[in-house]
Length: 309
Length: 258
View (spheres, helix red, strand yellow):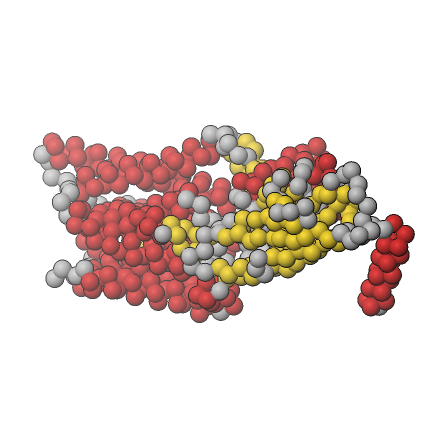
């Protein structure tokens, strides 16, 4: 069934979009990620203008993270103080991101920056996760106990000034890396239309050494607020949030996420991380190919304004 | 002033009638002067029909009548970009800005435009895809030798998106004087004010022209959403966030296991 999108100004097949939302929702439930890094490229490849795709996916992420936040809240697995620090800096980062997004779009280099960022971040994180999960699997096979959290072992991050105590996470760390992390993920989220969970979760675990059971809830809350801010800012500055598209994606996404979460409980942590690493890498490679291989059509047309100057 | 000009035109026309007995006139109409875009819009078509009226004084001539029906959409400022290799990557390099190019263009012709009239006449009337006026904004950094490549690419991409079209032999004659043509409007047709112009030519000269207005507009929910998003952007943004939170919360409640 075709439905006309009022902001994107073109019709899409409702079931295709619903299916995309559902499939990405399934993966997001399975891996505990927002799935924006999959959904945005999917929408762009299916012909929806990049600006509308990016802005609308931020709305979809609000919905998908909201149900997650609720369930982690009930289990008291959120460090509100840490999340507060992350998201205060995240909002600043996403405001900056929306501003840069507008500039890049008018320069015609938005696609390039999106592609390059996808290649860089997905490539790096995919490789890191692949190594980590392969190590964890081989360790498990060797029979040794594995430690992801090393409370006694400090790195240079823990030597920075302006320390603050986070009771729930049992942490005493500098606010500098937290602000840096929050703002850079907020920035990337607004420019790339991703929640950044797949970057935030490993960063919190490996850099700040936040306990794993607190990480996902806290990261989801941070994503929820940053993406809500990004939706609002996109709506105000680029007017490219398509509420009809968002609604179809949201409904598909939340349903898919439930099935994903159930499947996820049947798989082991290292297996899940290996699968996610491969998925992240695959998307990164797809973007790299687009940059390196000579495109069939060298020209592109973009409408600057539909109205008379 | 306008009345004076109108009077002059009429006087000139009468004079022309009297002197050359060139008496063809044209009547044309649209099946609908308003296209509404609703949630189930997947494109539509409009029918242009009309009659070539000849009076008794019309001299039968060897050359056939030529008809050109031109539909032009709202003007847009458009940028065409060309990718080039930069440090091993394919990135957008050169760009050409076009000012006020039609957002939609369809030409329905009785025969190829080159056979109808000379290039200046066709360009003036914008008959045929290759005679569409594509003015460049200010100065451009595109080398002169590449201008045509950008122009061709623009037309090619617009044709691919079904926004530009030229259809030869697409005007059907129901009788010697009655004609009809069906112009498809694709699903991605831009909204705005359109002009449908019917030209009657013979032997390279314009005999008559008729212009109709066509409005393509969103209606109902689509119009409401669009105007809300543009006119009350903060409210729209807040509503989108609330809707997302509500959906997430509902899902959390519906699928709650404990």
